[in-house]
Length: 276
Image (tube, rainbow, N blue to C red):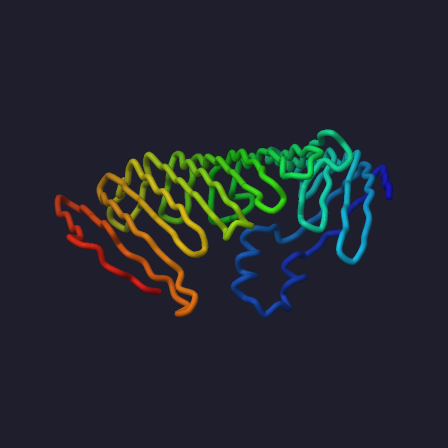
């Protein structure tokens, strides 16, 4: 299938009206914060696709894509090639290597894929202003990510940096996040978060929290969390957790907890349990 157009104008689409009959109020409220009320614009370009379909197997490849235009008064560019199959496996299809670029104004997503049976994807996401996608949050994101491993055990690795982050009463000049996630291996996860300075604006004062370090590791069955922070309100926390399927509850052991505020420190002298 091939398509090429010198350009066509999109009709104005009211996205809120499309979901106004949906009874899921909380979901609609969230969607209203991450999408524009209307979509309109004009796009042009070319796209070619090939694929096959059967009851158990299918694949779709998009090649020689070159689309440009304006959506809601901002420039849009989609260029490149990519292939997807029934196992959600991204690859370059029949090409040795392919690249897909999606750019909307100054925000950009780049994907590089390779022709292999295993996972071999790397990419980068740059968002210059989060407020464009979620009205309650401002800041910028730079994120590098890879997907590696065999098809039965994909390993998703993400290194992200959020700068000038502002949300409600919180502000941070820089937040670093590192994630390694294996969705087909009992959702095994490693998460590290570092933040040198976080400001909280209360009604009468501004509190500074510094040198925040958080590390989480575990899977669906067992988890471990370690966290520490300094500043006006300092603390340390170490806990382990287990999911008890028979009782359908999460059980944790708080091995260490210490909190300091205005020269007063509270800490546990022995581990204690918490069930949810």
